Structures are given as C-alpha cells and as structure tokens.
Length: 169
Image (cartoon, rainbow, N blue to C red; front, side, top):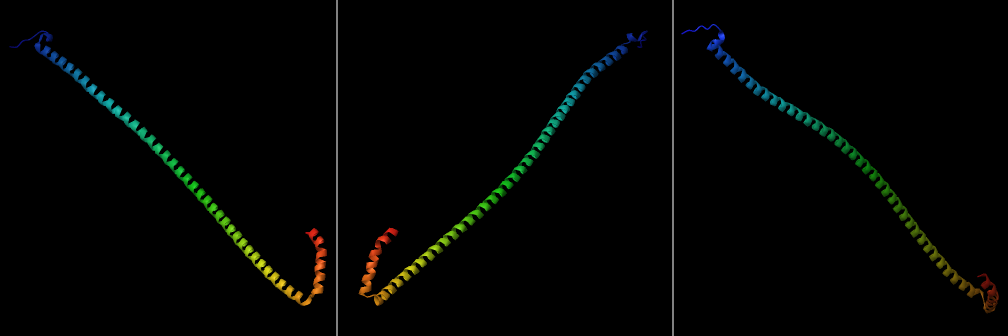
C-alpha cells in the first residue's frame, strides 16, 4: 500500500528522517562536546607538561650556572690556598734560613769565646810559668849578688818607700 501524501511533512519517512537527523545532531553535539573536552584536557596536560619542562629547564640552567659559579669559586679558593701555602712555605724557608744563620753565628761566637778563653788560659799559664821562672831566676841572681850588707840597704829603702807606695795604690 502506497500512500501519496500531498505534503511531504505528512509522510512518516520524513519524520523518521527528521528524527534521525535530530538524533545524529544531538549525538554529534554530545560527542563533539566530549571530544573537545578530551582534546582540551589533553591540550591542558600538554601545556602543563611544557610549563613543567620549561620550569625544569630553567631550574637545570640555574643549577648549571650555580655549578659554574661554585666551580669558579672553588678554583679561586684553591688558587688562594696554593698562594697562601707558597707564601707560608717561603716564610718558613726564610725563617729556617734566619734560624740557621742565627745558630751559625751563635756557634761561631761560642767557638770564638772558647778560642779566646783557651788563648787567655794559655797566656795566663805562660805568664805564670814566666813569673815562676823569673822568681826562681831572681832568687838565684839575688842569692849570688846580694850579701847581708846590700840586703839591709834594700830593706831600709823599701821600708822608707812604703808610705809613698801605699798612697799610690
């Protein structure tokens, strides 16, 4: 049975087609909303990941710059320590040289003092020996040349000269 409707909106096929189109539009709208929501979410996640990556890159760059600065500071500190160590070694070498020079002078002075003391002792021994020899020689000469009369004359002269000798001393 075939029906011919004068107007197409009275045809049930038309309304089925309209319903189908409306259904497809509603489903498409809902699907489009879900797709755009998912795509927006994915885009937001990608933006967040990119922002995090940029932040991590900035932090890594800052850490790299800090490491470069720390390395430069460590190198400067090491060079400073080396310079201080060299200066300290130079100072210690100079102090050691000065101490060695002082010790050498002191030893030389002590040796010179010992030599002078030995020389003075030797001179004193020679003088004492010479004095003893002179005394012995004088005794012998006086014993041979001076008699009792000359001896009395020398004693009288020495006693008379005693006040003058005591005043001079």
